[in-house]
Length: 195
Image 1 (cartoon, one colour):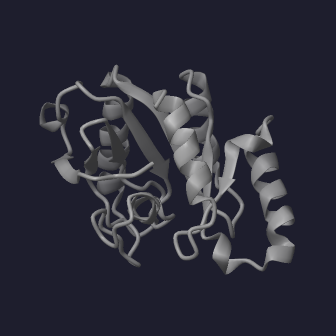
Image 2 (cartoon, one colour):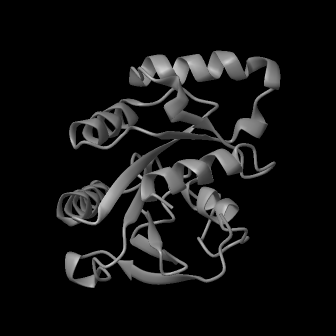
């Protein structure tokens, strides 16, 4: 998919700050520093429209990225950042839940996990939430470039087992570094949006 015009349309924390519900939205959920922002940047061929950081917990707001006035990617705050205060963690959880339960134009949630590590208990909870709410359960497994190719099968198997994924085609191993499976990710987006 060729992207011509994209903007960071809104940065929101509360429901009254969200943009209108005129466009379909695909949300990205995942742990802090898992690569949600890098995933967006890679798909749209920008280095830093979506702000990335080596510091976990950077995305504390919901960031709405308008793609060609056709749809939005919504970068949700990362969960599971141990150094965040309890209040911050509760605030982020509240912001995520409010969004997920109040957007009738939300068409899909991608769970973003780190290919190098087994999914955490929080990843499992989020994945179950995604399935229970009728979404398809697509998993973007980032940072594949950090693992030797000979080890990819083993890491993929661990993700599939930890999340109890029945259809392994729903897991997309992905690398922002070498753009591995960028086209496949776009294909999923286009299928979801019927483009």
